[in-house]
Image (tube, rainbow, N blue to C red; front, side, top):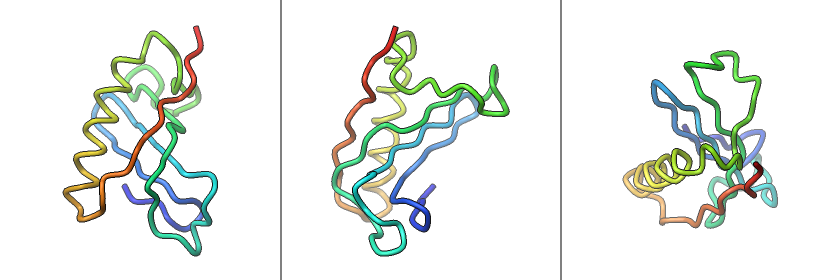
Length: 93
């Protein structure tokens, strides 16, 4: 998913997860992409289908986030954009 109106962001959705990264320093109405994203949101679609509990940065899900990050980076490059950096969310217990 390419989000570029309200913010500059990219996301991936699998059966189990929704994972979103964003660049809070850019303007979605003016900038179409970024070279530096930060993890923004991560939801478990099985246990939280309404996406009420953001799991980004929570340590029990850090391996899942790393896998989703790699998949999203691959998809960004496949879409023709240069490979950006994605900074993991700060880990919380």
